Structures are given as C-alpha cells and as structure tokens.
Length: 190
Ligand SMILES: Nc1ncnc2c1ncn2[C@@H]1O[C@H](COP(=O)(O)OP(=O)(O)O)[C@@H](O)[C@H]1O
Ligand SMILES: O=P(O)(O)OC[C@H]1O[C@H](OP(=O)(O)OP(=O)(O)O)[C@H](O)[C@@H]1O
Image 1 (cartoon, protein in one colour):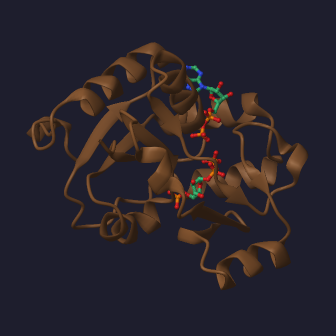
Image 2: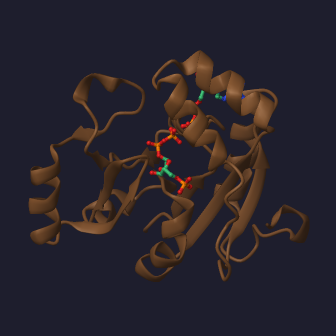
C-alpha cells in the first residue's frame, strides 16, 4: 500500500515544519521527506541534505529529482526515492513551494495539499522568534505571504495554524486518515 503524498504549503513562519514534525511524532507511519537544499548545513530547523550549488546542479543533471524549484535565493529538490518512502506509509509529508504544486499533482498519484494559514501579525512574530533569517530576509518572506494557490488543484484543504499547534495537527490527521475522495469538505477547500 502506498500512502498519499501530502504537500504542506503556506507562507514562511506559518508552521509548516512544526506541523510536519508534530504529525510524524503522532504517528510513526506518517513520514517526512528530507529535501535537498543549497542552504548552509548549520542553519538548523528541518532535517535536510545540504549541498552546494554545483552539487545541486549535478543532481539535476543526473535526474535525481522528482521535483525541484528555486525560492528565497535557494534551490530545493525532492528526490525520486520519495516513492519508496510511500510504501507502507499512512502519508509522506513534503514541504513544497506553492508555485510547484501543479507540477507535483502531475508527478504523484493521490496528491493532497494542506494550505496552512495565519495572519501577517502572527507570521511576523513567529519568524522573528525562529531567528533563522535576518530582518531583511524576514521582510522578503512576508511580502510573499499572500501568494495565492495556483488554479486547478484537485485536493486542497485549508487548515488554520493561528492557534495551538495541536489543533492543526489533529485537523490534518483527519484529512490524512479519510478515504480517498472522502476527505474533501467544500468548506475546507481553498
Ligand atoms: N501553532 C503555533 N503556535 C505557536 N508557535 C508556532 C506554531 N506553529 C509554529 N510555531 C513557531 O513559529 C516559528 C515558525 O514555524 P516553522 O514551523 O519554522 O514555520 P515554516 O516552516 O512554515 O516557516 C517557529 O519558531 C515555531 O516554533
Ligand atoms: O513559493 P512559496 O510557497 O512562497 O514557498 C517558497 C519556499 O518557502 C518554503 O521553503 P522553506 O521551508 O525553506 O522556508 P520557510 O520555512 O521560510 O517557509 C517552501 O518550501 C519553498 O521552498
């Protein structure tokens, strides 16, 4: 049995990494995809494979990635071995750019999008609290916060993460555990 690929998307600071960690702790069959990123290895936060830009380009040339994109001045890649991670999983969670979602929907069967939301004030506070980026980088991330989701996505669920982290985790578990085609409630789409 292959679990769905569940994209966790939303503005910087909304809680994508926190929600993903919490979900993985709550159920060992919920797995996290480890991204390849041209970010310094010591930056902290999520577990990722840090590579240099030439190393990243060599991986692209070797066709290692199912998906890759650029954002925040960095390159990000999702290795094709995500398919092995799906075997026997309840879900494989992956932090994706909103811009890459239409491509992802074509690449993966049973692809679901969790669109996390929080107000600009909450985002600004959380980014400052996280302390990974400079004030200038935080401003750049906040200007991207309102980027709309692309059209044509078939399974999108809005989840609010302005409140307690556990509430968002509980809401997402219900979406993951629902049978295919059953999880979508009209009011949860968007
Ligand atoms: N529901 C929440 N309540 C309070 N703080 C949160 C919540 N979700 C995330 N955070 C905090 O907000 C900051 C940004 O969260 P993070 O998971 O890194 O967001 P993202 O991956 O979307 O950029 C972190 O310091 C995290 O601990
Ligand atoms: O196109 P967007 O939807 O705005 O996303 C831009 C980038 O932000 C996220 O990365 P990352 O997790 O490195 O950054 P963040 O923690 O600051 O969101 C996401 O995975 C994308 O790579």
